[in-house]
Length: 430
Image (cartoon, rainbow, N blue to C red; front, side, top):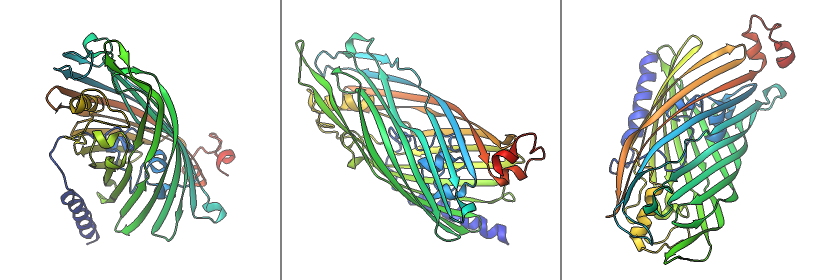
């Protein structure tokens, strides 16, 4: 039977992905500083799973560009989310000048990252090509204990945005390829205890991907994303104690190069159930600053979507290895703080995204208005804690909610509408 063959194909592939992972000790948070589509309006409800068969165009542009060919006509998505965490920092020894013992909750505010994308296919002109452009929030961090005198003004703010352009092309009926180029802008302030300021820089990043229809309602996807190198000039003057500060130092910071594999299947429950698994591999050891703080990291994202009429119900789970390097050394990003390894362990704790597990869910409504889809998602990370050497520890939990609207313009969209004239479809689609 077709159902049995498809189910066996899906189960076998999922098992291979699961048992093939070289998982280290189970202490981790999903994705270090990077988001990997976990805040996209549709993919966010599936824990970001989107490498093989994304459910919103923003995930295709920001993830595997080969999947752009799955979007027909014109698609425009506008989405946003609220992301807030509870971060606690503890320190019990003065490993840095003017740093005392304290336990404090970060006062950093939540953030509202936005994600916008548009795609256009050229099949009407006889070209098997779809192009896409978008603006994305791809990474960030924030810690603020400046109100605690013993912390000596410890704080961190980092925000990284991408403007991305790319295209996907159908090479055969089953195989597609794609590529994107991203111009990133980064803002960075803090991390090392001293006198710091918000510094800005720009950097390029590229992605290439493949997507293959394996048959039996199963799709395979893979992509490679280059690292992205920032230099934040004159970003910090280290506190040397006794009221003196060192010279202004540059901070070299790279987002890592990433490799991602994905599989998706929608043969179950009469084709109404989509199951997807993504496996990104993050190469922090190649990235300035983070090579001293993190180690290479495997991530697993598992997502499901059940379609019932115009409604889609989503559920997702993600697990990641612990990226924290147990031997950080004494220098990171070209900066060597006083206090040797214990001082760098304190620095690690400020970017110590350590949570093992995250859950997400969402709902989508197709044609909530003619030609407009609505997606709602939310999720959270269970609280986790970590000890950094002898003196420093932290704990972290977070949650997020988000939504998005997608406008579809195409002949196919208009044909589904019984009131096309009233909604102006003849003008927009024909």
